[in-house]
Length: 223
Image (cartoon, rainbow, N blue to C red; front, side):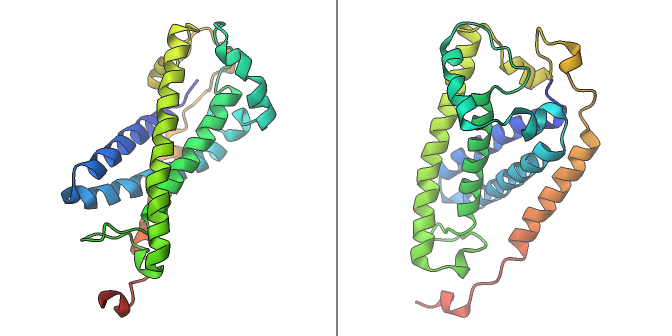
């Protein structure tokens, strides 16, 4: 059901976001690592957006994204004890994917412009005013709280599906296989080679974004 690149993306994002949170909490010595993890998060988001267009069936946005009304109509089924029947994401899960990608993009994107006011600054900190940098820093911190809230809701939903609906959502994201699915609804290939090309292009795009950032003006060095 889930192709290998989608599964690897999922767990890499879990690891990278966890490491981002830890490095943000343990002190200034890890600030540089925190910035590097932000670039990784941005690369992963870019990969997933492109993979949602060119990837296998259940990874593509067109296979699971529906309008807001579909998500609202799926709410009663969410609280039912009946097992889930969707092969891929249900309408609520689909919107959670979109929201997660937006939140991570905001988190990583605002990080490009902010500074720790001591040693490190995002590559685009020098091209905006200190006032705007402060605003983006506030968004960065507020967005992280929203992001962690969605992570908590995600974990709660997985737990509810496992205990209340007797549907294991964790195993398919580990193995790619889901019980009680018609073989005809599965995928024929993970298209791993294509995924590696997409990942390489995403990584190069983020590297170019960072390395080609304009140098701060000399005025930034005087107070």
